[in-house]
Length: 249
Image (cartoon, rainbow, N blue to C red):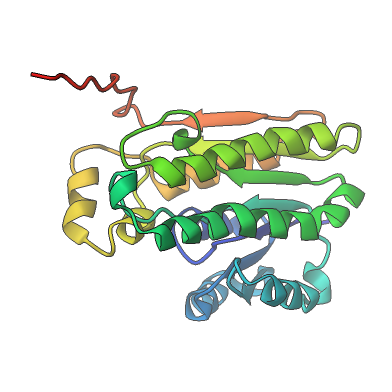
């Protein structure tokens, strides 16, 4: 019997790559996102084992309605991949718009916990898994990371807390924390600035969305008695930066 995974933010990057990986392995995939046209394109590409549910993760009523309308073959969800998220800007905190901070919190935190809470009863009943996409920013601060890093630290800690709360339920919970990975994420963060995108990834041999998809697939298909609590991933080209030091002269 095939299993079913729900992937939030399936319209690009990690989410789209993961949808392809799981459908290719015979799973049923529910992909969610705001851009219905991209979900339609994935449906055309991946066929009957993919179902697109178009909603904004910050719209709880829309989410509830969309999930309540899932076709019968897609209703029994075994794995939740909380992938939807974004960063807005790289400026220091005093120069950042408060609206950007609120958008990141609404998507990366509030939307994630609402979707998780909605699906938990079924995941518990099926002894399923919750896989959350955090970031190396969960663990390592950097200038301009401010609220984005804070939201991803929340995702990591929420994952650990959820695992504790689900003790004895047979539900696995994992925080996956990628470093530099080439995706549309950076275009969104820089307001569509392709030059900034090229400057970040040029010559860096960054991770690719397919690398994260393969990692998610590995975690999801481990034996049911094995739980990966957290997993931090960087390209070989990326390592840890030194501390900043401000000098008076």
